[in-house]
Length: 262
Image (cartoon, rainbow, N blue to C red):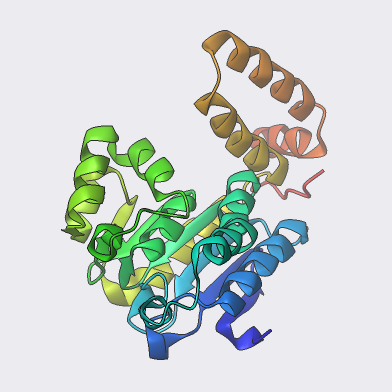
């Protein structure tokens, strides 16, 4: 496995994963997919990591699948299904189950599966130079990574269908209006702003952050009554934590709390 295809760095409780195939606009390779999955799992299992940022090297976030490989027909029928289920789907499922917040720093073009990889993250900070597109229709295929699952949950079913069926390019301000990205920032300030958000979240009580994310995920497929039952159990657990006690004491003592994740 070529470990240079995805760079990994941890600083101030934030793990930064950087897609590092700038020479091919960070297009996916089998090695990149496998490495990305394993690094997400590494960040998941590292107690020193409280938030995760995903970005791309150079002027592209991710251009999706490698079109050269598609044109050469390297993956056929069953091989494609296997590649998706054992590779790409592993990223989607890992991100969905991950209880640490993941932020995409969209530094440039995010096309097809590249856009979908950003949609899989919990939040998205977008450069004012970026563009996005669900470009599958231009290649005569459909999103094999969950794009048709994630996009309607952000932009609504009708708008999602329009974007999927036309493959139209989405400019940053339109993406912001549609709720696809959380904020648009000047390109030069992208990582600064993204890391500021990640570090702010990482400074909060880790157990509460994780349970907050789980609560939002649980609510997606839950009735109000079952969600209230679920959330009352989470609150009961959190009130027994050291971090809850620390937060209350810090408030009364008018100081900044120091959270241990216990």
